[in-house]
Image (cartoon, rainbow, N blue to C red):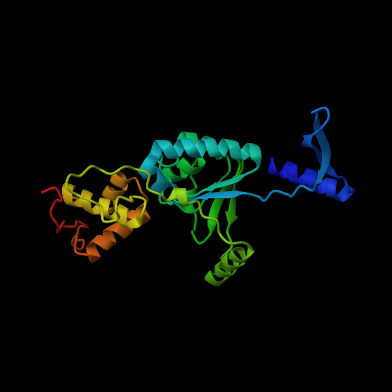
Length: 266
């Protein structure tokens, strides 16, 4: 547990207690026996880890079962190790907040929702549909007790100040593997990506998207999400680029697009 470890370190430093470990430094030249020495070290406190999963509905739409299993595992281990896990969604339906997910998130906050069904999905009882909005919310603690709360108003300037402060603490360390495309090519005959076969690049991903749209004669953000197994933002960017380059038409009054290029295999 992070809190328990940090408390032990603080107590030891306050008492002037030294931490040491025994390490092997070599072998005796005469007997060949290993030589050990005591090495002193000062442990560092561990940072608090806060994991925020924003817009769970988008993740569940792309890979529901896989995401649900990952969230369940993360929530179970987070409680034991002291990691804070926050999950948010604007669509509190039963296919997003499943029974498994609810069981692993005993503490919940609901702001104004549109129906009593959504309130029951979040809090297991109605009431959130009658909230006033503008920060008015219901807070359910771990024991199931519900309390009415009100979130403070935060201006954009305050948000920018906090973000600027956090950015000044340390440079970001991105996990590039999260956004890499690990799927193989879709095997569309006669189409060679312009990226030289490097499907991990954005150009390679775009070429694959164009090939799929040209072959299937379907062009929509949700369709590319399913076929390429990517998030909404990346799929929307690909569609916008296709429109700019004349691959697909602009969306009509019902949101449909016309594919303007032929199949690469023809």
